[in-house]
Length: 345
Image (cartoon, rainbow, N blue to C red; front, side):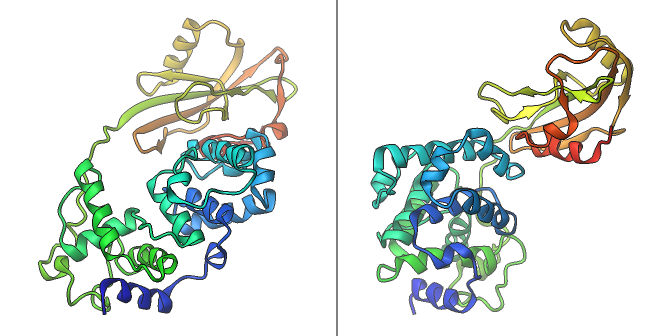
């Protein structure tokens, strides 16, 4: 059997029962592919169901308010995906009359749809012979062929796409593409791959050369930046608080948060008071308590946020104050959502 035939046979025997496997609706395939970027299947599944319940078709998603989309996305991270999802839905409705393009070339014109997503939709929904190359596919091909070109280099991206095209199954591209991704997720897993019972073990270069744990190779381009966040949770005599909406192009764009004081290091109580005295516009407080004794380190792909929540009791009634049960409807980063669940006024 050829490489692709082995993949198809394995897929027929081991594929997971996932909701998007039972459809060729491009809206549902697109939704699943966007959600599963940087997200495990187990984590993404409930979100997929929630989105389909709220937005059964692309028309409902296009008509939704961004705040609603972000709220439903809360906890999945990489919120630019949600904003692009919303923008793409509008584009499909306005420019394509609600019908997704049926070719790889046209699909790539959609916002947030790159090579991988366009290949997945084109092949799964429209049987276009376009190979998918995601993290799982990189791993399978790198190990099987013993390729040590970095997968995130310009040369590597081009080379692996060429290899993927050479070995794909033209007669059943839909199942083959899903199969090789599934094979990488389950059989040729990042850690502890099941090489002993792998149908490709007799011809796998990495196994033969004992390099399975070394491949694939990836250049570490990301320099981690440490940031120090102090969220100011103002509470007035009526139990009101205040929240701001993040603007700009940084992390968590358009999500809500408590007023933020960013410092150059972790602050103690005296350091916080000194910093607040230098700032204008903060409500005057009578008492301040640090909610978490140790900073919560929230790890993003390129930065680590050392976060403290400070509870500041104030005498005056807040202008435009919000009741605590009101803020639970706001779209917030999961870091703040976890705090809101645990803090009791």
